[in-house]
Length: 483
Image (cartoon, rainbow, N blue to C red):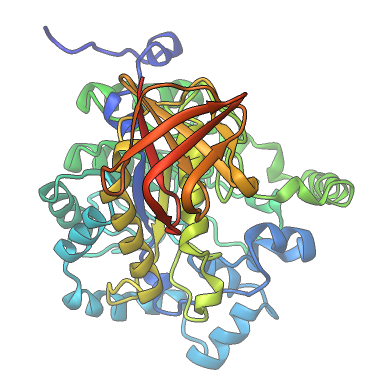
């Protein structure tokens, strides 16, 4: 039977089922790597939400995202601008291309692929072009604003081959909504950011580049960022062509389509009015900027909360994305204290899976391609836990409920697969017995870490788990119950 052919209309696109590989994979690795890894610097105000709460009028230049360095150094007085002046003098951002390209001699994509596989990831998404417009592949699509703004070495192609050789899926990220080679004005506020999608020749450029990425690399995932610079009808053609070229491909939700040249935010007064509304909202509700949850768009395969998660089981597939610290790109100033503990990252991952989510966990390599030790350690910890407990994660789906509470208030999360219910404690319990409140389940159970039997009994409304040997206090023990 020939594969379904999709047409460029929402009825066809939205009728397409989610490819099963993506739902079953659960865990992916995001890679933010580029010229911004040379300075590896950003303001230190906490997380991205804090920048908008405490310094709104220049928040975009004050975020902890090192990958936004090219914009931040355009704003006098920001920490990035001061660092750049002290470290690099009057050298422009473009000067980072030569040392980055020189450092590629030390980069081995196979080492990355093996470490991601060993971490338990099932797919990898590489930033192929971020907001600075620099491309990590030798693009044949001409950037009319900055010639040769790409690597001659095919980073995208080499990593795609290495990732696939390691048995993982490969995806591409593309900054469709922002490109600072086409729009060179400093971006300060949220309205500036939303109104800075380039027009003119840029929509054709972006469309051609994404098509080039699809044609050359056949990515299993196309992850656009911010927005998309063409009307919805033209975007639908891109989606249909992608699905017809890559039948099991998926796209995310950050494709807010439009005509940049007709945007009302081209007008400075309109941007000021929007900024005043946003600032007033933040004053009323300081939690308004806690993480980023993109708006619903006419078509996507999954949603992408950033440094945020959905609190309940979602019908539509979603993927939480975050860095291990406050930045995606490498930050030279990060210490161990700036990184989220492994237990926090794993706990959030398990919580997301129980609610129909995946995790796309970012690594920000150094300029020479080395993954910082703090990040590598967390990847290894993920791998160790998933090797022991992956049965409760991979290929599972949400149960009828996501949550319960165990002794001492320890959170519990559920997943299920064919004929089995998985119970994961988000804590480090000790002892031979564990009480799960308000849960009635019967069946043959085992502790996934070592396969030892777990006896189940009821005490009124509560489920009692009795282990073959006392729990060791390891974080997030998982029990699988045959129903």
